[in-house]
Amino acid sequence: MRKEPLITGCLYHIFTKSIAGYKIFRSAEDCSRIMEMIKFYSLEKPNVKFSSYKKAKAKDSSFGESLHGKEKIVQILSYCVMPTHLHMVLGQLKENGISVFMKNLLNSYTRYFNLKNGRKGPLWQSRFNSVLIESDEQLLHLTRYIHLNPSSDQLVEKVEDWPYSSYHEFLGLREAGICDFSPYLNIEPASYKKFVEERIDYQEKLAEIKHLLLE
Image (tube, rainbow, N blue to C red; front, side):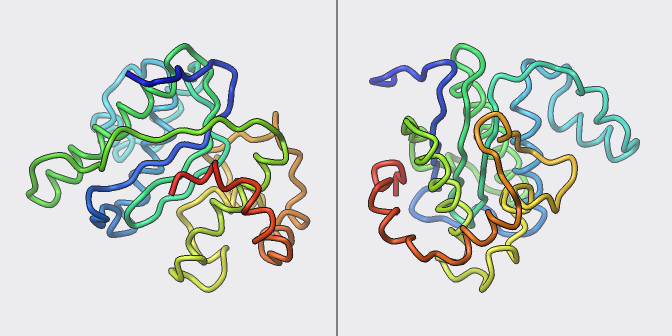
């Protein structure tokens, strides 16, 4: 049981990591799949399994429209898929929404990864970690930290070169995205790009939100 229950209406930094730093997002296919899963499992009781949804959508690209209008259990404000871990900022919309979302997401990806790689057993280090976000300023600087992960880990030189995060959605470069941050952040793409990439006060602000980072 969680020591502190996750509160509906609140925002959280969610972080989950693979066992022993095991590389679990190994290809564009893996990263794209977990991104699609994030969007799928944010919905309340989808009427199909994700595997069935994928097969039906492969045959008919319009099949995804059947899920439009369904209520969500979590709101996804930001995310970044890294080779060994996953960062998200989530808002809980329904009671136990984040816990249900994470259970379905992590179990589903484990089944996919193990089947694909002829593997058995758990994939994740432990139950996901969560930290309450207490202010708009914390939220803004946390999204920058999350989006900077790939360049900070030297996976890419420029932040925008990493396609497996919400950064392109924040810049308005990806349509029909996963995120909906508009109720909480008023993002002007050019200003946000400058804010992320200049990093002038990054180290100073990083100290202020260090307790949110979970790493």
